Length: 284
Image 1 (cartoon, rainbow, N blue to C red):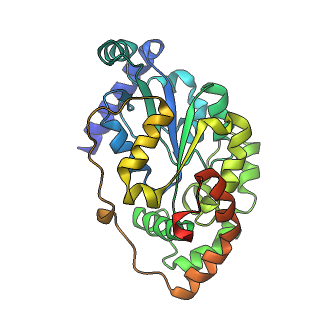
Image 2 (cartoon, rainbow, N blue to C red; image 1 turned 180 degrees about the vertical axis):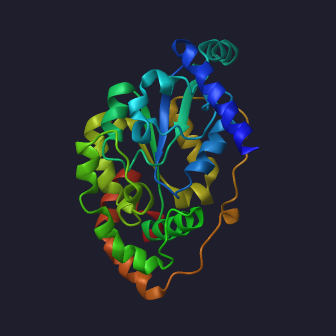
């Protein structure tokens, strides 16, 4: 079955390349952060008739992992223009294509690539308690076989060494990839304000919507309406939201380690308040 699925995807990509000139490009992207609810938001938005998801995958990962493939390769992942035209005629609003690749926010080159190839694109970022995010990411990467260190505390200790010089290497060799940067950056990915500050001069603050994942999961309808307002789209239908309590959770974190990491993120969380328009829910 996996081989058949791979063959179908290969044929679909080939067909997409042949018709790339007749396909739409995204109007907005969900760019992160990892383990912050991006899949839940993606699924909710995918239910809106005017929002067009990629034809194969939730995340195309063009601007981080596949930029050497070229823009026609990227365009091949999205719906055809005639479909968008039919929807525009039916609803009176221009449909918007999108994708969700949560590594875009963290990758040092993705922001500049997005700004260059998709001028005017809007970006959505979800932010979660960075301590919880790091703990969840470790469990996630361990389960997928990308992490070999079973102790979260030890993995955090190793992070600085694992990531030493990696960003410089990614900039020096722009089509390279790095396993540690993508899979083992537990604390670094939670420095949201630092990553947003890198993006702001590239796309402009008005094109960035930053959401608090805690509030998204407690009041999904409110967050959903904020996204539609940001995109300039009407509310059509009632989306079904993925319940937060079905998401897998690792065993509780030791209190002393939680306290230490909470202090570590205090400055970054304070800077994030201006992006959220409120104190982060995990700091209240």
